[in-house]
Length: 588
Image 1 (cartoon, rainbow, N blue to C red):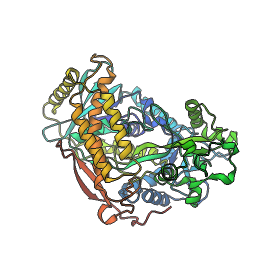
Image 2: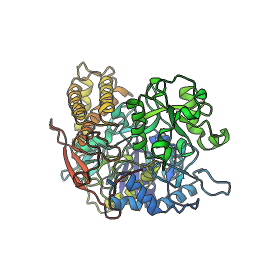
Image 3: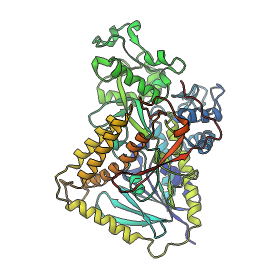
Image 4: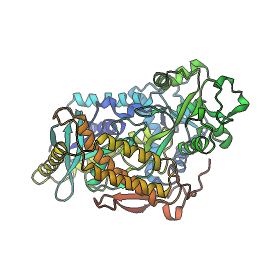
């Protein structure tokens, strides 16, 4: 019998981890990626990857890592898979080390660990400030070995359009479009793993790469997959505002001793050097003495918003605060943070070793995603998901440096589980529904290319981003959420009247974007409506009108089902697995 064929969509850490496990076990893999694999968004991760190895002798344990993750996520994550992830973390670090990831070391030659938000221990392994890039390249190297042996075939520059489902609703492959020639193809497979990353583009500007649109998740959501906890969106406290997107200033800058401050006097225009210590307001250190500048991201973000908008203390009256590294010697900064300091210098034109950086919170990560069970299976048979595109490991707020861990761990789970499923799958009848699905996609393309409307897709997208950023990020009010949903409905309606400036059939980026935009609009609704439903504050979801967490009503996963109806997706609440750590109030 031929070995099963698995399609993996997404060439970041989660996708590559899944590919490695499948190829090791003798499966055949087709790997699809919009961009060259080495340009996947995982490459942008800066700070590090968590594992409780306790090499600094602080008494850290995997149980404490588990507790920090559940507590940091405000008890909304299912505990069984999170526990397994935290227990697997030390071995994952050792595996990456043996793959040749150039982790930083102590003078004794041990792996070095730094502190990250939401914990009191040094448990974040790092490779300078380019950890994501080093991990991605190491995993890609392993995948290339399997590629040379004929076990893996890469399709770079192809976009996932939909899953192919047979009459019984079982996954039989995917349809995809070449972004060069715009041709459509159906690719058969015994199982499909989605590892397609975040949804930052729905918010317009974010720290995500511009290819992180959530389009693939939305496509299968519209085909019947549950989308869970959509309302939990992480805003990173420290980003560099830019014209095109936001650039991340990693939490590692604070982990290495960076201090956040503003002048105590509103509108103080003096150069930072002439502001004495006594007139500098180190607000995170004053308000949260135990964790200081390393409170979890949702706490830091709200503190910065309070300073800027309620207290009027932004630098020069602008929505910005200082992130100051100037008290740390240059050699240490270069050894541990050079990668991110170069980014700041390149885009702002100021050397952060001599001058405090100006930062402000920006949309960064989605804790929500495709609903999966503990084996990484969605509710569509044969369709699996891992990495940021699924919801499993972070609850209501992700701890810094848990994302790289959850991507690799999720991929390591999804790969073998998909292979096991595929080995027991009865053969498809006929083409498994491929021709019908291909025809449906071709009709969508044709309709877009010939539409004689007046709406510009990029303008619609900008309006979507502004609406989502205003109403559905840091502070959420029900009136604003209703407005946001009404705006999304209006944009979906205006989308029908779209006009493409470019109708060519070759490398047509505006056409590909217009297709993604429809999916972004459909996925924006469960985000806004999930936030509207949840009348409480939990983790990154903060409603000033409901400032307390409400476990009685909302210690639940939100599950959205696509209906296609005007009232939007159907939302239901599912119980959360809290068997290991009983919920307690979250106070830092």
